[in-house]
Every structure is written in structure tokens, then in C-alpha cells.
Length: 251
Image (tube, rainbow, N blue to C red; front, side):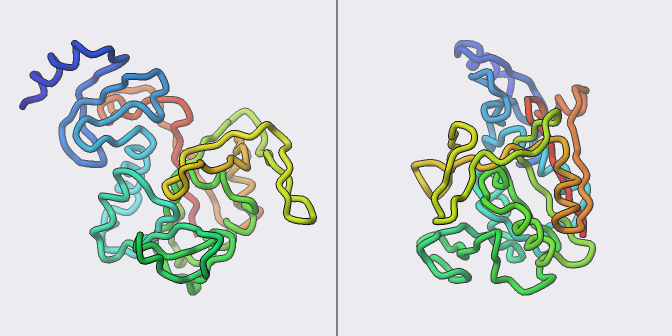
């Protein structure tokens, strides 16, 4: 079925947006279709079902590391189309965090290594690229996490990540950990989807326009915040929607 036929069929569905373009994830001509208004999570490639933040991350990765298939990549808490794209690469490893299992062990049912971003068991300078996609708003101790990511990156390596970013506020915690380990809400709780927990994952931090300075103070890594303005090239790659930023921290 060609794209013109698909367009005609989609016109019979209540869609909010449809555009022809080229997907950076599946690397094919495609249609980008949104049924809802929240483009960041709902503006999908009809071929691979990628969403804008995944396409944005992939575009930046290919620009910064053209031979990404030949370098050591680790991804924390992967999901979606990029996980499916990367997992066949022998240089790609991935991890999730299960509190009730020993750190550093492989969980057989998933093939993933159990790692806490704030206290990883990896050796120093192991990876060329470290990826997190909408993970850092869920951690308890971001200073520890950024230090650990910097530790396991090789010299010249990069941490490439997405996170909901509010450029006009200062970074702020949404929770407080009490002395006994109890979580106290500072801001009313919200939860995001979690690939290993159907209950979802608590949002613990709101990241603001000072994120680059925060990371530098925590780890010494310098961070570039990449935006995707409204222009023909970005529209062609399906790069539209709010909170569409990719951050690159360099060691």
C-alpha cells in the first residue's frame, strides 16, 4: 500500500494532524499522524510508531556519533522504537532498576542488567554513549546519578538524553526523603508510564532552564540543550510538539 492510499484512508479517521516526511528512527519515507493534541507522546510515524522525542534523540545521535553502531552504548530504562532498533547491536547494553534484586545481576526474563543510576556497578570509563529517555525526572538523587554517568563514560563520551524541560523555571524537587526513608510530597504527585511497573513511576524532579549548570556542578560535564524550532527540515522529520529538547552532556 502506498502513502497516497494510506492518506485517503486516514482522512476517514478523526485525526488532528497528518504530514508526509522522513523518519530519523526507521529511516524511511512515512506519514506522521496524531490522533490527540499532545504531540510529544501522540505524533507517531505510521511505520515504526516513533514519537517526536525519540526521533529527536535519534537525529542528534546520528549527527554527533555517525558510527554509533560501532561504539559502546548503554541505555538506562529503555522502551519503544529505539530499544527495538538498538538491541540487535552487539555493542548495545541496557539496564533497569529492581529494588529487590542484587545490583549488577542479569534478570533472565528481560535480559537486562539490574542497575541503579545513582550507584552503578560498571567499571570506570566503560561506555562511549550513555542514553536516558525521560528517566531523570524519576530519580531521587540526581547529583549522584550525574556523577555516576560521568564516571562510566569514556573521555570524550557523551550522555544524550531527553527529559521534560521547563525552560522558564529553576530545577526543583517534587518530593523529600524523610530520615526514615519515607517519601513526602512537596508538589502533588504525578506518575508517568514505566516499562517494568504497571503502577507507573513517580515524578520526583521538575527540570528547569538551569539544568546545564546543575549537571556541571554535579559532575563537571558540560551540557548543550538542543531545540527544534519550527522549520521545514524539522517538520519533515516529524519534530514537533512541546518539551521537545535533547540534551548532550560531554565528558
